[in-house]
Image (cartoon, rainbow, N blue to C red; front, side):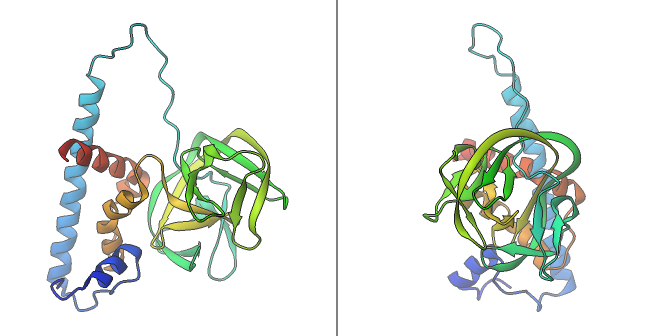
Length: 251
């Protein structure tokens, strides 16, 4: 099935622009699905082992230090995205399969990196010169006017965020806030427009290129029309982090 795929097709598969594999038989598809589910289960178990190993390692710190609560790597539930119809919906209404606005038109959400409507989480909130507001976790990558990526927590008053309609807009005010909900839609494009601001689907926790390749099996599952297990939609970010930890230990 994959023997005749050239480099461009392989790259397209990663970005979501590749073949749809309509010629895949049901038995072949089932085999692929089973393999990916096994892949997810094994990595999840390995991640738990890595975490257990880390927690049992004695700390070199001579005196006890408080452990901060893990910071989310998501958007709050009140954030908004745009559908193909032009309708604006809240982040807590986004579902797998819908197409939302990105840097290149509208792209399908193939997985929810996280979805928790009840959690109260910390975010960096920005007020822009055009009167718009935007919030994201400090570790979430945002696009700069130079085209590079920078963590939300590294932006300050006077810097600019890239908006989809007004270009680069100056930040007038920055503050840390607590908001309800934690959501992270992973689009096939790899970025998303939230409250009009262009943001990556990735964070500083795992390098974006690596995160994109680690999530590739789930892009393929989505394009095959298969359902990704619910537990991955709830916390696939932990899966990617676990995969990255294991890769670093092995290589």
